[in-house]
Length: 208
Image: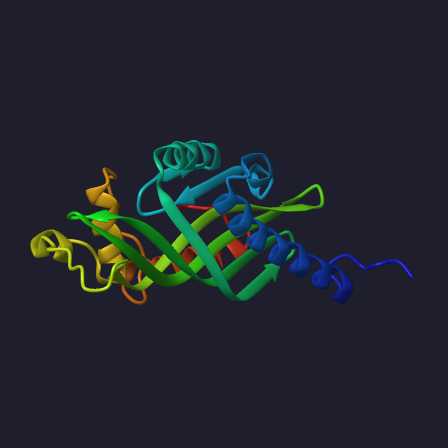
């Protein structure tokens, strides 16, 4: 029996492909497997992160440069939710971002919990990420050596949004310019992101 386009079998295959793609993103990016990492993106793919915003190719180049300088960022995934609308999809994936660096002379780990909010499109039978927008919900900073305490600039710390202020503090201290208007657990930024996601599923152009 032939598979009916957009029927149950087709939808199950699409969901499976998307889940594989989301998991491959994390493994290949953190392993520095750049050629395979390129394959998870739509030709028009873009990445929004605290420390860089641009095309997928620009994100790869920045990540490669960070690897060469010893920038240590790892990702871990949790549950995945996928909304399908033909050859478009929105996925949300629970995740943590873990980054290690020297902050005020003390080696620390920052762990940020949130979600990847992804706009996806299917072209010629293959799904790809058109836009990846993390949602930053909460974070914390821990010294790697127990008892070591970095003395933070509290004015600088407070200048960043609550959901990723420790991550932003670390990244700013190692030389990155951090975007201060990323979506968090609540607020106008995440509400606008949800509206863009709904519009994407209706077939409207991506306006972000």
